[in-house]
Structure formats: C-alpha cells, structure tokens
Length: 155
Image (cartoon, helix red, strand yellow):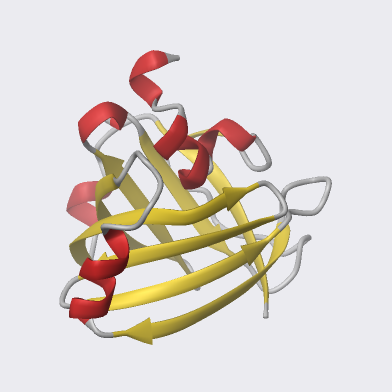
C-alpha cells in the first residue's frame, strides 16, 4: 500500500477541544535505515508491526505495510528496539472529509506537536484548520524514526 500524507507543525493547542478521539502511543524502531524502517507500536491495548519504504523525493508518498500483533508480542519487540522509544498522545481531529492525526510528544521530544493528514492523491485538496502551522512534509528530522535517534530537545 502507498501512504500519501502531509505533515505540519502545530501552532496552538486548539486542536484538543476539536478532537473526537485520543490515545497514547509507545513506539520503537527495529530498523531505522533511510531506505526502510521497521516500527513496533503499542496503541491502546493492541500492538502493530509496520514496515515503511523510502519516501519519494517530495516526501509525500511511500510504501507502508502494517500488521496487528498481540500486545504481549509488541511489548517484547519494544525491548529489542534501537535506543530512543517514542512516547506520545495522538489526537484525531475531523476537518471536512479528512482526519488529522495530531501527535503531542513527551520525553526527549517534549514540546513538539506534529499533525499529519492522509490523502488519496498527492494533489488532493484539504481544509486547513486554524491551529495548523508550517508544513514539514519531507523534512527528515520530523520522521519518528529520526526523532528516536535525534530528539527535538537536542536540536
């Protein structure tokens, strides 16, 4: 499956009152190579194993494969991950026909808030909420795999 998404910084916490869902995520990377990442994620009471390919030159698209695994398997795999486990709260905010996933990071990435919107095509139009800031699509330092290695607090 090809994932098409745009990524933005968030300039206010107004999204929190607009959110229809919120949950915590803990994730780590078994492999954070730029050509492919292998991520382990705990979300609510479920585990997920995700493989992502290299992004296109504009950063909008890349291959993504995801499989649900047991919570116990995810917990064990997180113990094998590279240094730098990511902890965050995800808020889901509906804006027009799209859902923005807004991640508020903790730990060494405290203070960073990023919003992503998945699209059906690279040129698809979407409504821009007033709390959305600068676009950072394709800026590698904002990829979770990079935030685990070089956290926001040390920039």
